[in-house]
Image (cartoon, rainbow, N blue to C red; front, side, top):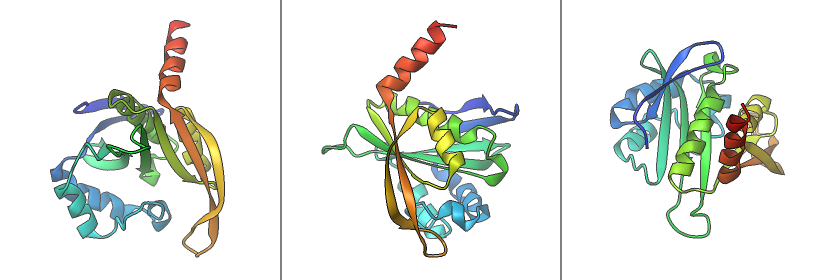
Amino acid sequence: MFGSKQNKLKDGTIVTLRPMVKEDEEGLFSFFQELPDELTLFIRHNVKDRTVIRDWAERLNYDRVLPLLALKDEKIIGDASLHRVSHGWKRHIGRVRVVVSPEYQKRGLATLMLNELVTLGHELGLEKLWAEIPLDSPGAIRACRNAGFVCKAVIEGMVKDLRDQNIDVLIMVCDIPTFFDRRWRESACQ
């Protein structure tokens, strides 16, 4: 596990990635308040509700959910999470979720955060990461592909959008050993 890391986006902007701590409650609440509803719709909790964010901050359990924040000048600009179960038939799989401020989209931040989650998944002994993405979100799909995820299934009409219309969901999976094998091969050839 890591503390704080500085990284550079495609445009040269320096951002900090670090796990969420209890003191991030207010900053995370402000981050979600500033997001348009269509970006928060796919999150399983009502992140515009202060009590939800307070509960997350007070009940941090990195063994269950590892929340990763991206910051620029101490302001939260991205939130990602790696969800795990400790037993059962999915104990080797982590679910991931990433939300990036519109101002920082198309700059490589989502891919950067996903790459970090893949690395953390590897360190935690996970074998696969799972992401569910609205099929009409090409930017999110591209970020996942850039981080080693591949398309596995489309479930038609699975979820509802803000207009109460059914939309398709794309299931993407990253095979962590293959991801690291590919990275090793690429770096060895350079």
